[in-house]
Image (cartoon, rainbow, N blue to C red; front, side):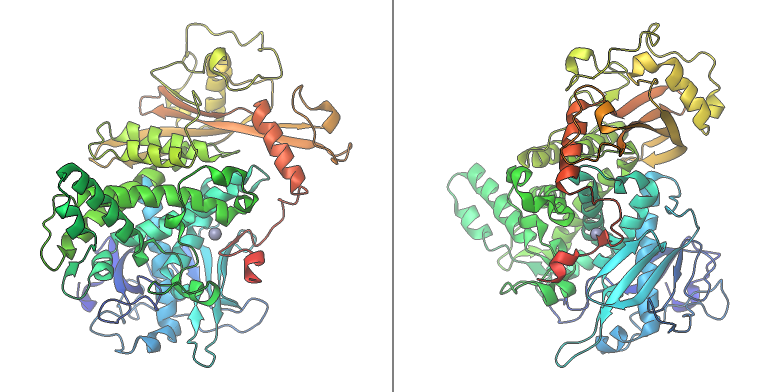
Length: 603
Ligand SMILES: [Zn+2]
C-alpha cells in the first residue's frame, strides 16, 4: 500500500508501522523488527485519537503535557505512515526517541489488539468504564513497568531515560507490553467480576490471557516469525535433525526429530515476553535474549498446586501460558515433519508458515471461548472446559488434534475440565445429583419441579436476544431443569448477541446471557457446610458469589449452561480459606494489573 493510498473512508484497515518486538530484539541482519499492523480505519483525530483509544502524552502527577500527535495528513480521513520502510530513519535509535512514532506505535498495537478480540468474539467489546475511549499514556511515570488502571480508565506506560551506556527504555514501544496491558483492559470490560476477591486462579487468568495474546498475536504479523527464525540464509538449522535421521528406527527418529525441533522452537524470541524490561531485571542467560517471563520452559507437572510461590498471579499465570506455548511448539514441530531437510537447514518460509498457522489457531480457540467463561469465580479448569466446548461448537473436525493436545497439556499440569459443569444441549440441562462434585447445603426447592425438560412457553424469542428480564423468565420457568436455585438472589447481568466464525468458516450466531448469584450472610449464618475462617469479625457480612452463562442458538433454543453454583460448598470453603490467609486484602490493589508486582520491583 503506498503512502498516498491510505484513505480512511475507502479501506477497512490502514497499515501502520510499529516495532513488532522490543527494539533490542534483532534479526540476523542486526536490525530491529518492524511490522505494518492492520489498524481498523476510522476518522483519525489528533492525539492520536480514534473512537476506542486516546493517546495522551502526560506525566502522571505533573502538569507537563506534550502536544497531541497528528498522524493524519491534515485531513482526518487521510492517514499517512511517516515511518514505513521508505521513510523511516536508518538509525532505529532516532525512532526510539521520536514522540510521534511512539504515539503511533502505541495507538496501532492497542487498536490491533482490540480488533483481534472483537473479530474472534464477533461483536464490539465495551471498556469496563463504559466510556467509548480508553486512555493510553506513553510516558506516565519513570519506571520500567506499565499497568492498566480501571480507576483512570487508562493504560499507564512507564519509561526510563537514557543513562550512561543504557539507551532509553519506553514500555510504550514494546509490542508485548502494550498487547498485554490492553488485554487486561479488554478482559475487564468482558468480565468485570474477575477482580472481585476470589480464588487465585482468577487474577492469574487475567495475566495468562494477557501474556498469551501478546505472544501468539505476534505470529500473525506479516513475516515477523520468518525474520526472527531466519539464520540469514533463508534457512533455520535444527541441530538435532541429523542425529534423528541417522536413527535406525525410522519411527523413533521421527519422534526424536519432532521433540528436538520443539525444544529448539521453544528457545526463539517468539516465546519470550518483554525482552527489554527483562534485560533490566533478570539475570542474563548466555546466548539468549533476556525476558521478563519465559513461561514455555516451565516443566509440566502439578507441583505448582502446592507451591506457595504460585499464589502470586504472574507466577501462577505461567502455568496456563506454558500449557498453551508447549502445545504450540508440539503442534508446530509435528507440522514440520514432511519438510525437506537440506544440508544447510530447513526452508525458513515453510517453518514460519506452519508456526503462524498453529499460533493463530490456538489463539483463536482461546479468544472464541471467552464468552463461555463463567462471569464470576473463574478457575483454571473452567478455562480448558470453555476452550474445548467452544471449539467443538465451531469446528466439529479437529484433524490436527488441537483439542486433544491442549487437553493433554493442561492435564500434564494437573488441570482437567470439571465433570458435568458445562452442560450440553445433548445431555441433561443440569447434572444429575449423583454427578455433582460436592453436596449442597440445602434441600432442593420443592417448588422448582421440572415438567419434561426445558420449557419455552410464554417466552418472546425476540426479547430473549436482548432482555435480561426475558432471560430471567427462562431461568424462572426452568429453575429445576437448569439446577439454578432461584430462592437465592439471581440477577441476569448481560444479554448479548455474538457471531463467531470457526476455523473452517462455520458461522455461529448465539445469544449469550450471564447471571450471577450473590449470597450475603454474617459468618454465623453461612449455609451449612460453609465455614467462616478464623479471625473473621462476627459482625462483618461475608459475600458468596456464583453464576453462570446460558447460551441460546439463533432460534432461541437453549444450548449450553456454564455453571458455577453459589452453593458449591467445596469451592466456597477453599475461597474463604484462601482469602483469610491473604488477610482479605484482595479488594483494593490499584496496581493489580502492573506488568510486574511491586515485590518483583525490589529484586
Ligand atoms: Zn498483567
